Amino acid sequence: MKKFVFFLVCLFTMQVVVADNDKPVTFEQLPQAAQGFVKKHFADRNVAFSKMNKDIFDVTYDVMFVNGDKLEFDKQGNWKEMKCKHGLVPETAVPAQIVKYVKTNYPEARILQIEKDRYEYEVRLSNFWDLKFDLKFNLIDMDRDDD
Image 1 (cartoon, rainbow, N blue to C red):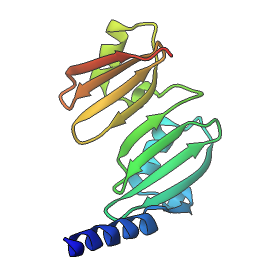
Image 2: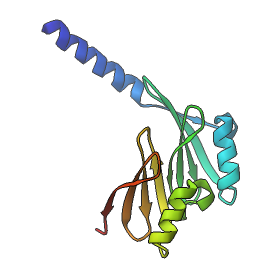
Image 3: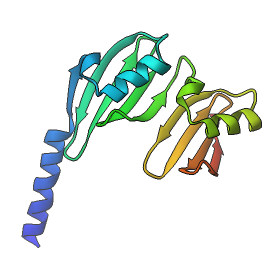
Image 4: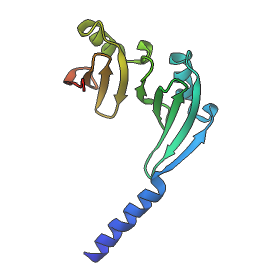
């Protein structure tokens, strides 16, 4: 039991030491897919900085724009999150099925944030609705957060 506890303490210590390994990178050091995505969908915004986040098991990249909007990419340069606090997520950057659903059901709303992981898409709308879609773009959950 003592060896197991010691192992857990060592593992936790390694994670803490390695987890905060953020490193500024130039835009040109981002994966090609990420560069292309930014140039295609966010060409009207100025990049403030970009960084690489290293953790024990994964690498991600963040791009922050001057207006405070933020993108997150995986190590291959595929988008994971688009968070637009002061702008809107461009419709061209969002899967067409999600854009269609939002336009049909919430014509007055705009997409402020979208996040995808291995199982689902989470979408935050300007009318305070949070929508969840599975990978086949079926609505699986919704919640209103108007605090």
